[in-house]
Length: 357
Image (tube, rainbow, N blue to C red; front, side, top):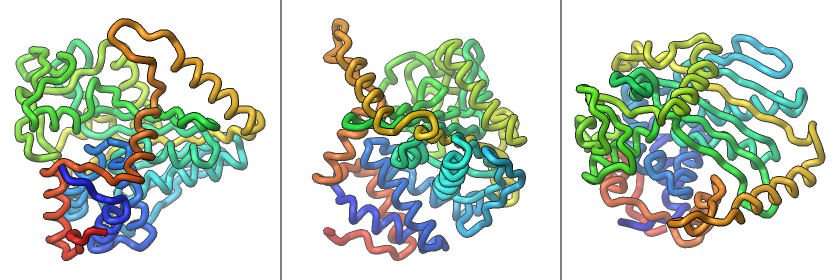
């Protein structure tokens, strides 16, 4: 484990993006989103995913410098073709557009075609929260997850995030996969040869297991293929996956996840979609009053008497906010193999990564 400062990591990620052809604005977004994932402890969406994200740009599956084309535009909603842009850049721009519409109409909904993998789903909802808005984000991709009761991959992990601004308490940030686990969690469990907390993986033979090594073909690769799938968490997880497919696939007119069942190339990237929503709290009630109520709600939730085996009830987003504050002061711990992956990419593009600052 190595500890890296936020400043150093930002400089490395910025340099990598610029070497890949990003504008200064795109490089700043790329660095900020990946560093924030590292700060919040979502390491599979930060340092660990850098080689994978860079690989997408090298294969022309994700692209810097592409236009953000509005196809349909209404007062409170629009449809955008992002041109297979780099996911974190697309996500940031889409939420900016959603917030712009929310300031005028109260709510802003943006559907995105060809937006790509935006990594930590919490990034765009935090973007909204920091402007005193509620943010909602979700997206689909290619089949990785079997529906409850099935054995074949049909859905993506179908991430969904909701962010709610607060006053003195940490923002309420729900960031989850509709599948029992994220792709990164499964790959890392296989890499570490450790069991997952529940038997919600299914092999190609239809056997449920908690052993990720039985379905991950090559754990050394972040984009490892699966011999089977992650199972949605019961019928409720299945419903969440369906909701994401409705909002991210069917409504923007792109493929549902099961139709993205092919290896993407520069000539044929995945035809996936995403949904971004911003709600301007001030259009409903004074923001200060809302934040007071949100704080009271958060404190009430965390004060519920704990059950046996638990220390306390944790409000979603609380732990990540604490890690972010601590790591901004003390530095960001990164696993050795993940740091080596960043160093390898940096060396390939002649980006300075060995300074101590």
